[in-house]
Image 1 (cartoon, rainbow, N blue to C red):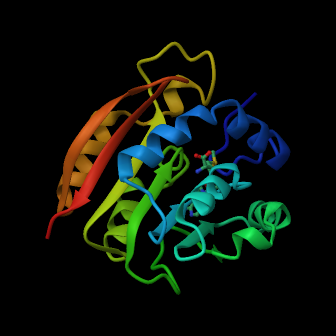
Image 2: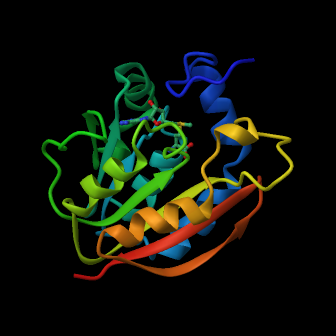
Length: 194
Ligand SMILES: C[S@@+](CC[C@H](N)C(=O)[O-])C[C@H]1O[C@@H](n2cnc3c(N)ncnc32)[C@H](O)[C@@H]1O
């Protein structure tokens, strides 16, 4: 199956099934960024929102989740799955590569499995810099191009950790931790430093 950055080769139910398949990653991400009740989170590229709902449970009603995606269809699936317990989720239909509307300075930005879909990953990183508080955390997680390729996008359509490291260092982000994860993933934990 040919890979398309906009996921038109799969469909949202399939994207949701794949999110459920790698759900175990989300618990490590939550720990890494220190997500807890009251925090504000910008989730870039929520897709159908399987992980977004977990973040909403963690931050609770004192916190806020900005669930941003360029696809209204994906956001509609998230809204359908949201019950009154998750009134802390604000959906934002926007392109993360363009200046972002209506997002206040947040404590945490999640960018998981987005950058290999972006036409310009550096524009996404530059944009989020404007929307995160000083000393806020950013978690980037991606499929590793040096893994086996048993799941996820074709190896040639992945973005390497080294490539992302170069991009984030062009902005005033500090890399505080990095590592490998299951499901052929790696992560980078960043802090906004200045
Ligand atoms: C593979 S899904 C990842 C969903 C989720 N973050 C995860 O970790 O599973 C990629 C999502 O990013 C969205 N996306 C890709 N490029 C985007 C952009 N430039 N702006 C906003 N959303 C984008 C797609 O619409 C899709 O819902």
